[in-house]
Length: 81
Length: 463
Image (cartoon, rainbow over all chains, first blue to last red; front, side):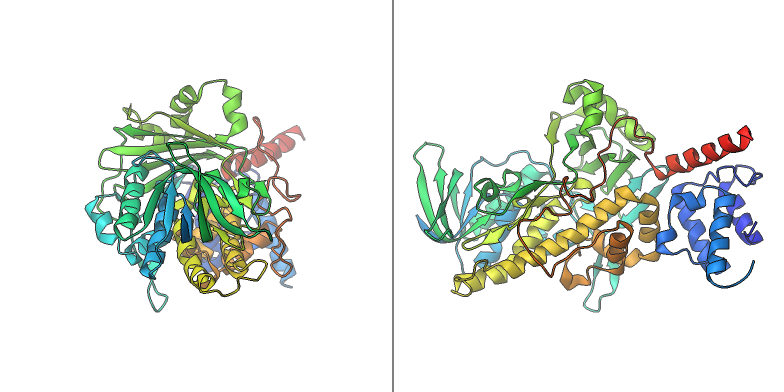
């Protein structure tokens, strides 16, 4: 999984009081405001800028889909995973 | 009767147009068919509408009338967020500001009385026909007063402020009138006592802010205080939703409105209705070619998109103000031989309103991206748009709006203007989103997220 640990931590904090995400395919269960904060965190703290066209709910459905998004972006940027 | 300018309609558009003209020494005739005060919908204003009223010298009167003060809009979906009313100063710096919520029977009477006080000539009557010269220019109107005998009012310029009646469009003086993309929506509204407001004097929890609640795509409600005790509550849903319930408007409103959101249900637990439930179906439309020789249309008389961002009064007032210099030159004799002496004004208004339309469409089509842009990536630009700053002279279309167009996959071509093609805002434009139907699979971003996750779970479990 390409998701930086601090991002996983942020996601788990955002879900509180729900337990941390255990399964890469389980729904993240973060509401829309939480997702907005998540994207902002990705940009400010992880250096991952989600482009306007990438702001679609399906990329944030689960850890797997989020990981796939980050992986795709890293490959486009020419860095290897 | 002969006059320079005849204004059809004594609502806020007509009264404002009259007051702007009177400032320049022109005495208009206003034709109004109803006795005021009378009930009317369209009760919230943007920041720019408030600022315009102050420019018209109405600020003190608005304060004296004790209209509720709006500091912003709270939106309740599955979470809640706040859009403040904000203004820009001479250096384009943003500051918090406020505007008003109005009971229209009171506000419209205040405006029309002021227009009369300042010198406008009032004629009670209904416009029944546009008068045309041989070459098709408009040169006045025929009206029918309450006592029956029709009479003509000849005028150099007819200003159509007839609102949803769209008088000149119905007379086929303008270009075609297209049903808008929100025409399959239906709006219900009433006035109630006992609605629970927030309680601060200003800011996010100010007691008289607009509250918007939404349930799922195209299903939403408004809660707008109109005085110290009375709140206007509105419900907007797809017509198909209303039809599926097989209830009268009154039954449907009372039963369905509280289900829009638990926050709304909490606030309307113990209410008393002080105004009947009104209904407006098919409220969305756009008239092309709404200006020409001898005529212009203001506000609802040529276009109404959707009530969700409270632009009704705002667009009307601002169009009157923007029209003024064009009207003055026209009356001085300029451009009178052109096919459309007001075509620069028409294009300016169309472009500005198109920016608003892109914003409304984006809100429904891609709520997640919209929310992100409002809160984060294009916060100030969207605060401007919500405040009513949607016109070219106000840094529009902003990058936010241009991004909306890119994500909605639409282009707006202003280089090959025509007054007849189907606009993007039309229900029948090839790129319009499909109609909502009952049992549409996805309502909100949250619904989508759980649906997408469950289907993945289903696939994983099946392996």
